[in-house]
Structure formats: C-alpha cells, structure tokens
Amino acid sequence: MGRRWGKTVLGGTTSLYFASQGARVAWAVPTYKNGRPLWRWAENTVAPLRKAKQVDVSRAERVIQFDGGGFLGIYSMDSEDSIRGEAFHLVIVDEAARIPEGAWTDAIQPTLADYGGRAILVSTPNGKNWFWKEWMRGQQGVGDTHSWQAPTAHNPNPRIKRAAELARDRVPERTYQQEWLAQFVDDGSIFRNVQASATATVQPYNPGHTYVMGCDWGKYNDYTVLTVIDATTHSVVAIDRFNQIDYHLQLGRVKALADRYQPETIVAEKNAMGDPIIEQLYYEHGLPVSPFTTTNASKAKIIDSLSLAFERQSLRILDHPGLIGELHAYEATRLPGGLLRYSAPDGMHDDLVMSLALAWHAATWANPVE
Image (cartoon, rainbow, N blue to C red):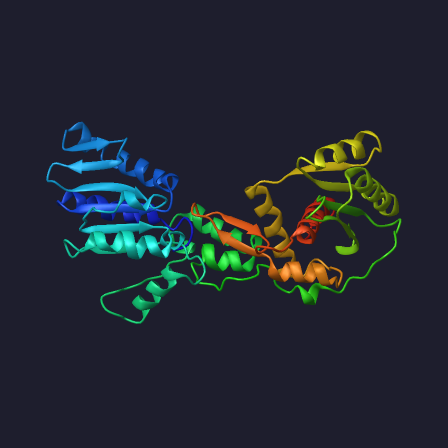
C-alpha cells in the first residue's frame, strides 16, 4: 500500500472488531514509535466503551482488554522477545517490509500456532525482500495466501489524492514508484542516467555566468571535495579532491578555487572540522559561505534532489571516474522506522557525491530548475 493510503484505519478497525469478538489480537510494528499512530487512534475509538467500563485500557502496556476476553496489544519488533511466548488468533504486521525476516519467521509466526491464527501483513514496499516474496505467494495463489496492491491515489481523501499527484514531479521516480504507487522496485543505486549526464567539461570562469560551490570536508581517511557548478548552464565545471592535509591548507585550496570562479554561494558541510574553516572563509576572506548541517533528514533532501536532477537530465557532470563510480555505488538503506539512510557501501567513499549534492543544492537556489 502507498503512503497515506489508510493502513492505520484499515488495520485498526479490523483488529478492534476481532478483539471485541473475543479474539486475541496483536499489532506488530518495526519500532516502538511506529505504534503511536495506531495506539492514539485505537484509544480514541474505544473511549466511549472505556467510559462505559466495557474495556480496560493500559497505556503502559499499550493493551486494550475487552470484557469478553479479547484484547488488542501492540508489540515492537525492535525487541522481538516481547511477542515470544504469546498466542494469538490474529496478528497484524504493520510496515512488514521494514521488519527483519527473522522477526516474522521466528518470533511472529509461532504465536499463531495455538489457535490456527491468521496474519495480515500491511506495508509500503521496501525493495524485493521477504515481504515481496509473501506478496508473490498471494499473487500466485500459493496455499491460503492472498495479496493486494493499493497506490496512495486510491485513498478517497481529495487532499491525499492531490499530494500523490504532486509527488510525481517532486520525488525521484524510484521513490514515487515504491512509496506512492506501492510497487516493488529493485534495490541498488539510486542515481540513474549517470553516464548519460557526464557530458560536461572543465570550463574557465565566464563573467556572464553565475557559479556556486559545494564543500564536503575530510582530513585523513576521507577526502575533502570541492565541486563548482555553473548555475547558468547547470553544469559541473571544476572538481578539486584531496586528503591528508590540515585545515589551513584546505582553507587555501577553497580560497584559490573561489578566486577562480567567484561563486555566488558556497554551501559547506558544517561539522567539527568544517566549523573553523567556514568561520575563516566568512570572517577573514569575506566569502559567501552557507553552512549545511548534515542530518539524516537534510541529507535525504539534497540526495533526493540530486537523484531527481539525474532522472530529468537537468544536470551535466564531468566524466570523472571517481565521481561516476561513487554515483553508481551509492545506495539507500531502509531504517527500522521507515526512513531511508543514504550512504556509500562499507569501505567506499561518498565525498564526491556529497560535494556534488551540496553544490546542486546551491545551484537550485541560484537558478531554479524549471
């Protein structure tokens, strides 16, 4: 199911109905926080019954107990032991694709044995993992497994329909297919059309053009990378990559490249090492430095923007072997909470990608893509 399709209401209604009929029902979520929306919804739904003393609600345990003996309990799979030893008539697994396969096979499935219970797996896809295999079993009619697919646009709420329409032009195609169309897409590099976009060449300064720079800092093992983009043509015109030099020399390299291209904006990563360099560039040299604080959310924003630029081929890059390699290898990993973490594979660098993403972030300020 696509994002905002209505999974919580569907699953919540189903779970409360069966619990009210005497069934033992579990709602399994990837992390404790993932259970909050359902718990709020369920607690509000049974509020009249609680007032009439027909149900008992334990906020500490997140359990709703009905007078007939049925109950609904929320269990977090970041602690699989919380569900072991239990027995249920029905288990609803929310965001199932974000739960490890072992949690499904070793912790959840055995809880259905005592009563010959059923499971409902509800999720937005996450590549072609175990959840996809279960979905395929339903499509192929294997055993008593059944599966359905519902994109976000099937939600009748007009605001959500509108959000799904807007997302088509605002997120990368892979993200749109998976998160909004509820399609199973292959894992792998998030950047497409990389080689087709490698048509730019190193260019000298053109006084009639606007330039921007992205700076990703490194010192010993990691590299510092400076990327200059001609914001007028949306083309990379210069890259400087180096490591194992102290920040005074790095300061000089940035200043030299800035003197060559007169950037309108320099977006520089703000971290422990970047702080003193940014301060000197700004206060001592008067350069237009804009610090960028890297968090998972802010990183996802600029990487998604860069990915979209490659899909639309609105950015031209240099045919730089290191950059091409990093772009092809760059990957997205789904965190238990559902967010994506972008990074290079273990043992590889992503300095060129991050510098390019920061420069593209600056370029879209200076000259937005139409």
